[in-house]
Image 1 (cartoon, rainbow, N blue to C red):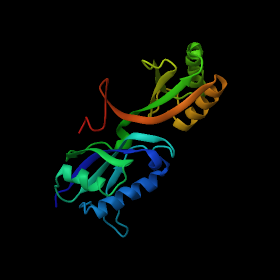
Image 2: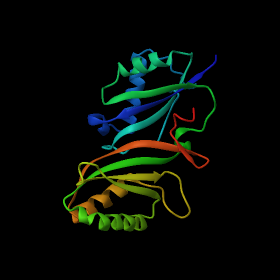
Image 3: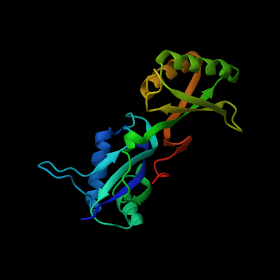
Image 4: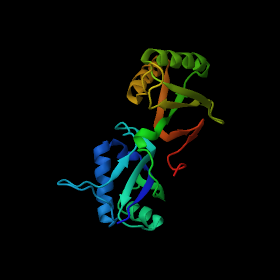
Length: 221
């Protein structure tokens, strides 16, 4: 029997951001059963659905870019797959994109190299922005993890600044991989000291590296 693999992107926002990774996996498996998706199962005494996920998102962090690969036993319509699953999931936990592929590819955890996070900051005194940027650099030195950051003052609302973090999930030189919770703790301390409000934060995207180009897991299928 020929097997097929579907890669899909889903979001986990609103109240669903408080689900653990295991709870999220169970929710997708249950939705697939209700939708009668012909999921391929492993062999042996304890068969499990053949599902491969990207890095688990920390509990409490909203994400617009979770990824998974699902093996199915027969070729099905990809749009029907998406609709059927979404009909059995919540509005804050739903499939955004789905692609059919048969090629053997690295696992999502092995392939994803960078994760993009966005923090929405409110500055009561925007003159502190340069000092805030310098302190972000000190945090990087202190926790010795690898990331790149970008600040952008929002047009029409100069008190709001988006801080974008590109955190590396793979070891680079002698630095540690980016750990979101460690960074968040330090950012909260810094923001409290500088009278800056963290209005919102979320995971926006995940990337693999092909040559010198960043691509999403959907772009390489």
